[in-house]
Length: 409
Image 1 (spheres, helix red, strand yellow):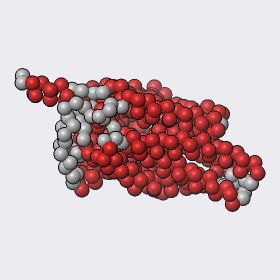
Image 2 (cartoon, rainbow, N blue to C red; image 1 turned 90 degrees about the vertical axis):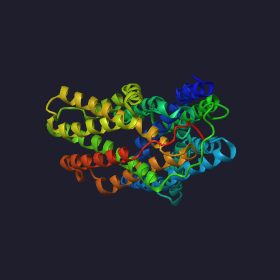
Image 3 (tube, one colour; image 1 turned 180 degrees about the horizontal axis):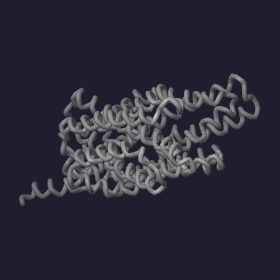
Image 4 (cartoon, rainbow, N blue to C red; image 1 turned 135 degrees about the vertical axis):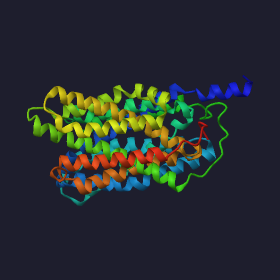
């Protein structure tokens, strides 16, 4: 084999594991930040004299903003990368603002709640809460775009498995650890997560390679992505998120109807833990059979499991279905970042990640508007809507074809 062929073969097998592991801790911290925020949000607003219904309204505003914010932040990080060969200026801004607001908000709530719980100054807190959501949006897309710099295209699914693992473990805190978080209080948990976020971002900066590029794969043409590709990336973010949201909404309803004595949060926690546990195998499977094919297998399995949800007639069956949903979704979720990063030029990695999260935010917003009340979504409607979403997601995955084999830009 000639020297240049050997260099290309070696570069295509490269994963910079330490930076990828550091990036996974950042993604886990971001996910955990949202978990802590959502657990305590109702308590924060009611302590200031707002109605409990104000919390979901605030979340809706934040998700609507994220539809445009995430792609914008990703695009700005692409521009920063081209000018300075570095995405970290925007990452540091997002991390610093997120951590600072997480530390300031509990102090304000405590002081205002004790002195002027119904005064006009209380409106400062919702403004800061929205700014916090904006800050973490500024951080997320630029940070996750770094995955494109840390792994060759053929190894992206294996690299992404660490991110899936971290997100699955952090996501499990909602069903399994919400009570413990409430007991600790928002002051302690907000400050702890703020410190964790800064530490993980600092570790990512420390392990980040100086060139932010895999050797031998730095010269990539700045091919402008097509509108179709960008639209499909947004569609994947929307449909994959909707499928998962529907599954974790209707599964507890089935459990309550058919197993009244069951503990739904335990089974939802199992789903998240199965996502995390199967992340590494999901990456290996995607590397062997192809990422798109692995995602289609996962989408098909989710469709079958959604149909089978009504057969939950015993706790063992519920456990099997929960683990099955987690494994199937792990195949899908683990493939999303590698897919969207491989269909655009590496110089547009931030935009691709931002559009994916923009689609996810669009789904979250629509779900809050149409199914904000528990009784608004029946099991039958949820299953049918889930199957339609799975079909659309499968079409998006099939149409999107990886076009860029280089790992960085």
